[in-house]
Image (cartoon, one colour):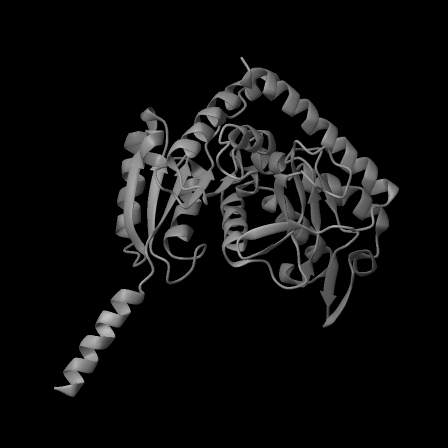
Length: 350
């Protein structure tokens, strides 16, 4: 009898301590980035191995038949953490009571399209999504903008959701960060986890500045400055920077499709760090609201900085010394973001 009672107690205790499901929306959910992303989220790679999940897949009406196929595949994976999958084309369903939003969907640049036309189309999308977040999502929601132009789309979404703290919005520069780590690691003949504290400054565009002046590389158990490990200043100030800046275009040229697998991995890295924090003594790159920064960057921007995260709250790594080479690169990408912002704000006010 005692054994039976003990067993019943353990069952009840296991049920009572089971975490409540969190609600996670992915937009552009019928697209190729989402196809690489959804499995990792649903199996626990992002929000934890004991965190049940309700996945909401949001896309435009013509993509609903494709979403049905994605839902079937997620069901067929038989993932224990995945409690429910909800496909929808309605923002009031997509953003209802969500804990995390991964905004992948955006208007892609089409042949012959001017940058300002691209901005105008995306302002409309992210104004609508920001307003929906404001109206339907939890005020604690963590919002990651992936769709390009990611920094400015993130700013528009944030401005359209005034009741959600600006600190809850970020845009993806982790893919660029991972690319930079990988390039340095390959150059030094080490694995990428032996490279830390690279920085992506600024815009997720070809003006971004991959900076390794503060990076460390562990070579044969000895940690040293990246410049000392690489031993090639010309490469670090030349081909390294241009390779990271142009990597997305190089992938498109080779695959005839944009980055998907690597983008999905970067999204997972970014959101996992928001949920669980960064490693002690390390920082990563995220596009965040620039207010209060110590680097002379205009404040009303989403700009990529070195970031540390603890208790789901990020803070900039302040006070890093900036040389003249870095200063010029940081200011150039800020200037592009100011121009993008001003153009987007004109459209937002129309």
